[in-house]
Amino acid sequence: MQKKISLSQFEESVFSVIYPYLMKGVRLFNPEFGHNLALVSLRLGLCGGKNPWQDDPSLSLQAMGLKFPNPVGIAAGFDKNALAVTALARLGFGSIEVGTVTPKPQPGNPKPRLFRLMKDGAVINRMGFNNNGIQRLCAQLAKISNVGNGVKTQANVPVGVNIGINKIGACPERDYPLQIGLVSRYADYIVLNFSSPNTPGLRDLQQPQRMEIILQSIQQLQPNHPPLLVKLSPDLLDAELEAIVEVVMNNHVTGLILTNTTVSRPDNLQSDFRYEPGGLSGRPLRQKSTEMLAKVAKLSQGKLTLIGSGGIENGADVLEKIMHGADFTQLYTVFAYEGPPVISRIKRELVTLLKQYQVRTISELKGVALS
Image (tube, rainbow, N blue to C red):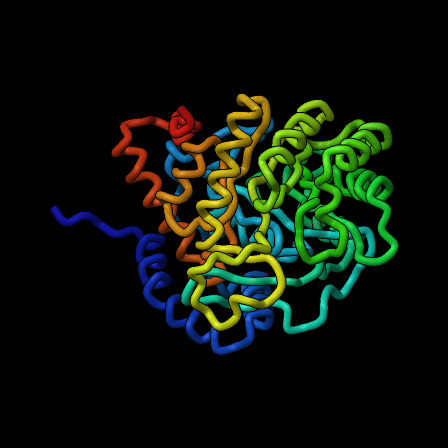
């Protein structure tokens, strides 16, 4: 008997065929225009957005006291101003992180500031925290929040807020607590961005002594907040990393995101824009970020929630992060290149892999590669 194909399956099949051609059209435009076009399309409901595939139960997990339908999240940087949270959730992401947001609105660095390295499956950006500011982000999140019943949004997946500092007039000990106080009622978790290479002096906040002062100021000024995470650079030395892990474990931090973009440039990059200043993301970052993830997993001994980010392109890459200690993962660059169909593809690949490993849930494979 021939198996019937549901309408949602048919829609996704058509969508998957058509979308590569749409993405080729988008790549005719400069990258930043293409990014903005994608956000507008999501807000208008033109990019699918029906989440036709119910997530397989094997992909569900819990971390930080939150439930995630699957381990594939969208990293900060795509939706800086929380304009497309519900649409991104409908595409099938298991979590959504908005931002990076700063206390005051700022335009970011001069254009051009975003570059495709298509031969390398990578992107270089030096955006510089262009955003509408924390007040407008909170107003946007308020539209989709049901604050009276816990931190729940129309997205029905955990929503994190990534916060940073302004390029001019910043005081980290003041600005991070200030933003935490404003956004806590809307965020399921909050991420301190100390690691973008595109704001002068920001990476200096990763120095353990300076980080500890900031974390202590948060605890003093905003002791009640959602789970707090810190996003780290992949360019840290092992000694620095060890000291940072100790600091965060002693100062009310729930977890770490590993990692942000890198300022290093592998010798095998082929694209014309490979020497542009800024942070490199995508395929060339995968091994470096996974190695750092594994180091932190061993240092923290299960006491921190770890999010694996950097170079994820398929289900095997997600599982690699999980097996090296991640609780769940985030991607961005592959989404920019392939568009919405990549989400369902990765989740299908993950389900197939879990069957091969003969496990009931993906969390059973957490950290198995660390021994």
